[in-house]
Length: 410
Image (tube, rainbow, N blue to C red):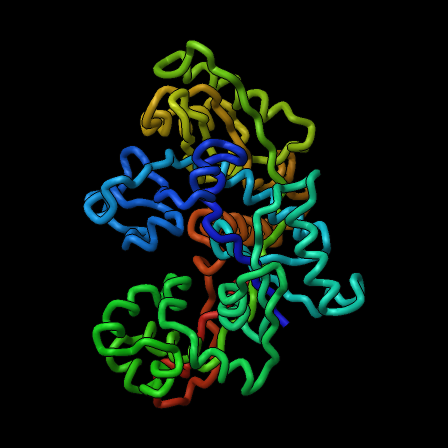
């Protein structure tokens, strides 16, 4: 069984702050929305229930949102604080033994069958997940909604239907499919590949997933392509298996900048952070493949920028040159500057044996360069960025059946 944990309005709750005046306004029913980031596209982020009731939706243009709700209160977005809070929530779930697949901030999936040996029953596993997200020593009580089902999409639909602290679990087979048939079409908006289909399908009169399933997969595929076929599979209770994230070691250094909030003084602060990060004993001589530059702004809110180097580096000057250019994107003076090493490369001291035949040494060096290139490409564009072609049926008349793409083993 797949378990879905959904925390409603996670980004808005973090940006408003626990116990703050804005948080109390959210509970009182005021219209709030996460303001667009400076320099980015002018679209609002997550919105409160009161703003949603007045026609404001996530991703709406700022001008349209203010026209629909003139008294809308904009909360400065803080992606740095959101990332830290979400990482704490994921760590709490991993502490109970769950191999999580985060979809976005506030939405995560994991398999529960493998956890029965630790917690005993399915109900005990769900209770352990709820306790992990409400412990005072860990992340705050987010009011998480938990649902379970045979597929990722079924578990998501169950979690969104929960209106209390009691989890909703759907059994496999026809029960989950019959239950999905009555769910609204807006569930497709939680998948990036199918979110664009909601508007055209609504104009065609489709309101529920059951009506979508009755249209037929060939018709949807002919009209909307691969996205239509995926939407039909989701409506029929089909989905791809989970891909749990790999737990990556991270090293972080932060510094209060005081008066050095911009310009050359801020670059000198960045140089100190780079030297501190490279001097950490936990690095164990490894090179840096990717890093995240973040800042807490003096006027409130946060900013972050992920940088993937062209190759794994351990030279402080080259790392500083690659990161200092990104400081020009800082939207406002910073109060705290942070640097986090996200992905590590091979150690600098990794060398081939001294006495080796030239041909064997050449093959080993070529294979090492190929592995390094694949790892660097995956750091830039994800795990599916580097694939290999595998011959399956070379005599087939259909070109798509002759060769398939498969992941390159690490």
